[in-house]
Amino acid sequence: MRAPRIALVAGETSGDQLGQALITALRERAPGAQFCGVAGPLMRAAGCEALAAADELAVMGFVEPLVHLPRLWKLRRMLLGRLSKWQPDVFVGIDAPGFNLGLAARFKAAGVKTVQYVSPQVWAWRQGRVRTIARDCDLVLCLLPFEPAFYATHAVKALFVGHPLADQIPSASGRSAARLALGLDPGARVVALLPGSRAGEVQRLGAPYMQAAQWLRERQPELLFLAPMASAGARALFEAHGAQAAGIRLLDGQARTALQAADAALVTSGTATLEALLCGCPMVVAYKAAPLSALLVRALIRVPYFSLPNLLAGERLVPEFFQQQVRGPALGAALLAELEDAPRSELLRERFRAIHATLAQGGAGRAADGILQLLPP
Image 1: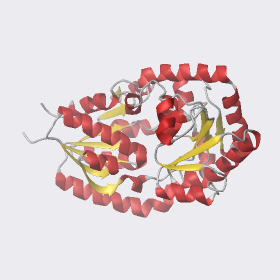
Image 2: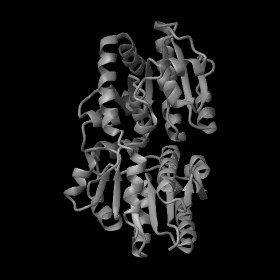
Image 3: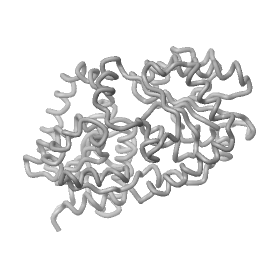
Image 4: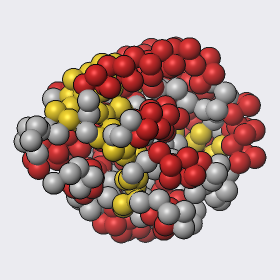
């Protein structure tokens, strides 16, 4: 019997991270397994043949992807052709559901087992999508503990695997080591700014993040600001908002180290908020979409929070700012409150540690086991 062939299509930096951990776990269980698809640098280093780069799927919002539709359709046609000739045993879409669920439908119709790794937030908005998922996916691998119960009511096979980031990040803070690695004074007061990995996020949030830093520095001149940049493109966009003139130290990558070193962080909603939680870093969360996308979010959303820490806790643990609320002084004031309230910060870290323990389930290994169980014996 030939070694399993697993097609992987990952979107963005977070998908690349998940894909790398998954490939490593699959190789441990099926040493001869082969991997091909859409991959970032981490997945390529782990042994995945890349037909396209993961950042080609880095398109956010509801309306913005319309501009990219011709390119995305062309990419999908190419992948269907190349991967079909390769004859995968399993297709695994890693996040990017708007792109991957369409591929899953085609592969499922061709008799290939299909997996969606990272559940779309169907429990939060557009719940009708669950019917499409039930039709096109043999398995949904869930990162959040409350998701399988939702799928169970719709006859969808779903497995909570935990989050690989929770396994990768130690529960101890690692602050001293992080500050040493960044050359920071152990006693410094440090704020991390994470404006996002997508160009649209940095364009919309760069200015208010900069204004928040300036507002804080006027009141706390001793504060140090770190801004880990997800890519050279994100760095260029953030620099255009005056980061260097404002005295903000830009880092190439190193988001985790910056979050471990920081006393508080201003973070764009997404996986980075989970990373901040796992690093034990108090945070303020912001999100700003294109105007039409924001209108649709408000109309369709069915949950009271949008940040992962609050969704996981089931309550408002961290401040959230959305759309018009995202203004420099408001963000700065919220950050100052986090920095000044030491008892609250310690309580917050305790809650973060409890959530960390819930999510640390050997996520990549559990995901690999679920995928391999779809294969014939």
